[in-house]
Length: 357
Image (cartoon, rainbow, N blue to C red; front, side, top):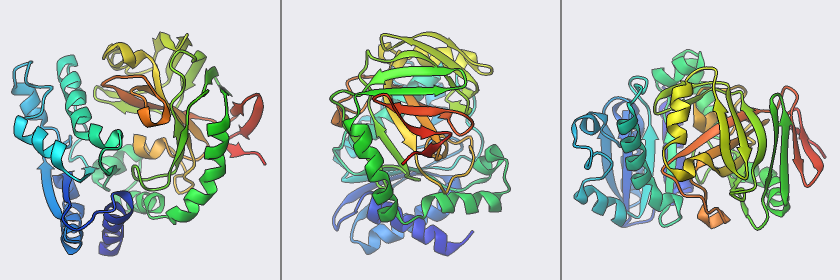
């Protein structure tokens, strides 16, 4: 693994993503497989005069201890330890790195709920804009195997997607953000798909390497009760219960009324039962990262794949006008490159994954 690329990646996270300042206390949550990056993050934070509060977890999850969740009483498992909650509430920034040593095991319903609740507790301050926060991955054999690549091949794809000229990428995505922010109605048409929803009164943002890594999307929060129609998500998605593929959803008045999947349907149904908000859409996003050329079975990459769109079941973004609340935020991806269209206010703006003039 190239030390230069690891160093450049750490610099992206420390400088661009969170903008660490002298005296800051920065939570760095990583797994043992991400040790090279965790060490480089500590070094670079130290050089900037910031404190690194490092949390290293074992195995599959970050910064959540699945062994503790499995053993703890039901009333404790969804919560953070009081001292850890104090840390999360006081930090000036956070960097969450995921690099599993093994594939996430399928969790039973109680463990899956506890897992989601703890992850939400860690991320909430960054998600609602209270402190700079970034969520990212690190190359590891598990991710390479999921993508069907050798570790060396995966590293090349990984860094091609992450180490880009993000100022230029942001400039290229800005016209799409402006068009999305001005739109009132979105329609997605494709295989097994004809879905409409409203964006009236909702803003849109560009992720140009500031929010999570890799960046490369334009996203917003749909009006919660406006989603109507059906959609086939043809890119497989990992949940806390395992892999789910060929997800079909039908919406009425913003709520999922029919749901099925070719594989992993029980996991889909458990996710929809998370809470009342889990059956509604919290996010609509458009993938724009051309460093990613095919699905990787990794949501942080697949949702950014140029030519795709994604909807997230669950929590919306209050700073964009989103009002849906849920412990779930599950991004599901639709590939439009093989015969799909994206319409804004009745005009086709993207066909077969390519933006029209």
